[in-house]
Image 1: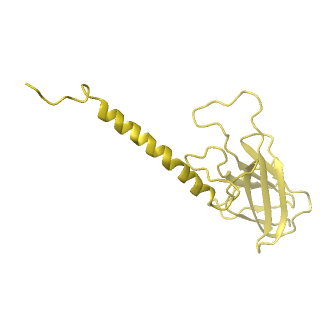
Image 2: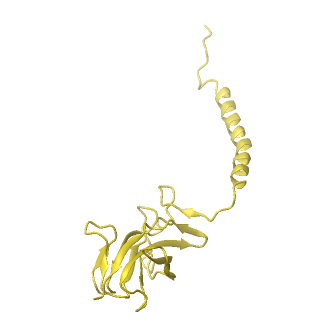
Length: 179
């Protein structure tokens, strides 16, 4: 009795289908690349999403009266931070570039370029500083003495790696009250 052959006895159709699918993908790929390259060139930005482990937005922006004083978190339940120094320290936590579950080397980690911006509450620029963080995990910038008078300000930070930039943190409003 002659019956139908099973997949294992007759693999020709499956092989043909696989080869055809690969050929169609090879033909479609150049069109996808051409479509992507026709977009205007923009500066690459990292959004910190699941597929982007390089430059997530810095976290936990905080401000302090100085390098040895305690920090106040931006957007905390206590309201906007108040500092009593004209040269507060601004800080944020940076993510390491190693994917989750991997171990970074025991030596010093990769240093990160970090950009800090400070404006008045009305949006007038006060300070724009790019520096290199001493570690791959944290960044801090102490404003030079006398930079800020009493009043309301805001600041934000982002990381950079070559032409790639993270998103800015949200603005952190704070008040300087020295007297």
